[in-house]
Amino acid sequence: MADLDGVFRREWGPAVAALARWSGDLTVAEDAVQEACAEALKAWPRDGAPDNPGGWIVRVARNRALDRIRRESVRPGKEFAAVLDDINARTGRTPVPHPVRDDELRMMFTCAHPALDRVSQLALTLRLISGLTVAEIARALMQSEAAVGQRITRAKNKIRQANIPLRVPPPELLAERTQHVLGCIYSVFTEGYWSTAGPSAIRDELCDEAVRLSGELCSLMPDAHDAHALAALVLLHDSRRDCRVSADGALIPLDEQDRSAWDHTRISRGLQRLQLARGSAGQYLPQAVIAAVHATSPDWRSTDWATICIAYDRLVAITDSPMARANQALAIGFRDGFDAGLTALDAVADDPRLVRSGTVASIRADLLRRAGRPQEAAQWYHHALELDGSAPARAFLWRRIDECRDVPAREP
Image (cartoon, rainbow, N blue to C red; front, side, top):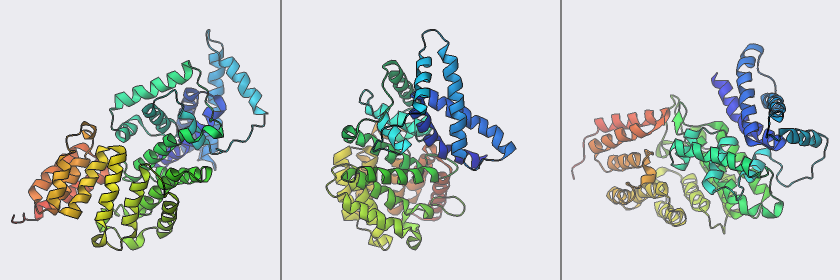
């Protein structure tokens, strides 16, 4: 069952993108792929998984979509008959080549239609293309599940009612939608690299997809500095993927990782992308610089916290992100002393956008632990447990709590 879940997650985005491009209807595409996955869940354990699971899902989903279109075409007030005629007409037509050839990348550009607000664009894309659940998207956007669900529903309805065409914009208009695509790829990688819920800290299929899509975007737009910055960020972080979890599934913090086991080929590629990103004015460049400092430091003690703090200053100036400010406080703690880090954290701790996140509690606990205040740290680690749904993260927090119990407080 777990293996099938991984297959479905991996094939969801390509299948929905292919069906949406073929049918011209997001709801038809999503429902058809869901039905195909449900059918696979019954058939594959009985008959064996096919050699090409993705092709099987697309083929079955297309049949289910055709069945639905035919049913809908006989209902009063529906226009699916015309859609079906168009689908059949396109079957033998040779399309004009478009520079965006990757189906998922095409759908990301398509969902960035200016008629939708940016948050709705992102929520819709993450649901349809990346297969993230509403709960996962809500955590990524720091919003409630109800609000995100409503956004996705309204976006679909607006596309349908306003007859917004599901097609990639012409090449000359791609640039104005690029920031949306960058944001989607970034969110996909973030959820894959630090899963916010579930039994695994890392979702390999999402990390792999983000690495692939960021590279595709750089190939499509070689002069886009922000695209290279994002690709650098993804590659540099991903170089540590296999070292972030212990054999028993618990998270391994950066200062305890075996740096010799990092993927140095990916580090090299990330640094090359970072050079190409020079001139970027977006949020991904300072984040990539931070990742590069960690990737190139020979050990934890050699970390250049001054450069990291400068990069955070730039990131906060660009985004005003409370998450960036919280992480900046940790960097300040290493540069200026842990009491200074706690003071910086106090300035952002009450931001309502962080109310659903355990980040502030975890950072405060870490700063208190390093400052020699283990009893207070243990209390905040407990508070972080109340907000963190990832099993590996929870295992790590319990480990920290046990460590705090065994360490006497330092004399002030």
